Image 1 (cartoon, rainbow, N blue to C red):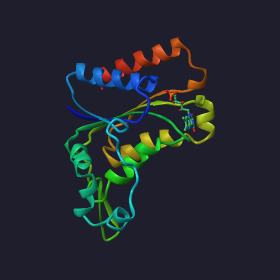
Image 2 (cartoon, rainbow, N blue to C red):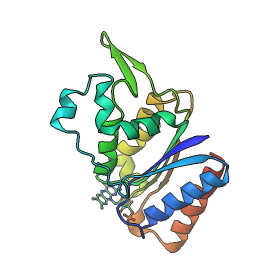
Image 3 (tube, rainbow, N blue to C red):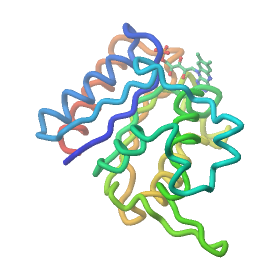
Image 4 (spheres, rainbow, N blue to C red):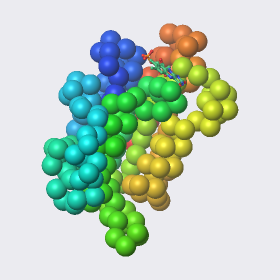
Length: 193
Ligand SMILES: Cc1cc2nc3c(=O)[nH]c(=O)nc-3n(C[C@H](O)[C@H](O)[C@H](O)COP(=O)(O)O)c2cc1C
C-alpha cells in the first residue's frame, strides 16, 4: 500500500523524531511504499497567502502553489501522521499543510452548496501523537486533536474505517520506560497497519 507519512517535529533528536523513524521503518518492514513527508525538513511554507485565499475555490488552478503536495496526497492509499500536540492542536506547519493542500477539488467538491467527498483514494488513517497533558486534562479540554483525527480525518477520507489513534499522554512526566513502551506499541501497530 502506498502510504503518505506526515511528520511535524522541528528537532531531529527528539522523541517525536524517533517515533517518526520507527513508524516509517515499521510500515516499510510490513511491505508498504512510504512517501515520507517531513514538513520541517522540506521547509514547507504553511502560510495560506492572500492570493491563495482569493483563488481558494478556483478549481483546478487553486492547486498550483502546492501542486507537488497535492499529487503526493492523491497518489496515497493511506495516511499516517506523527506529531506532537501544541495548544491542543496541530503544530502550525501541519495545520498550514491542511489549509493549503486539502483544497476544494482535492479533498471535496462543492457544487450548489453540496459537498462531495473526493479523497476516496485514502482508505486508512493512523495518527501517532504526543501530549504534554495527562489523558484526563486532555479530556477536560475536549481533546480537539483526537476529534480532528478520529472524526474529521475519518469523515474526510473513509468513514467506514476507524482511525488508528495512538497517543503518549503526560509527556511532562514521561520516563524512559513509558517512552520505550509507547515506541514498541507504535512499531507493533504500524507493522500491522
Ligand atoms: C508550543 C507548544 C505548545 C504546547 N501545547 C500543548 C498543549 O496544548 N497540550 C499538551 O498536551 N501539550 C502541549 N505541549 C507539549 C507537547 O505536546 C510535548 O512537548 C510533546 O508532545 C513532547 O515532545 P517533545 O518534547 O519531543 O517536543 C506543547 C508544547 C509546545 C512546544
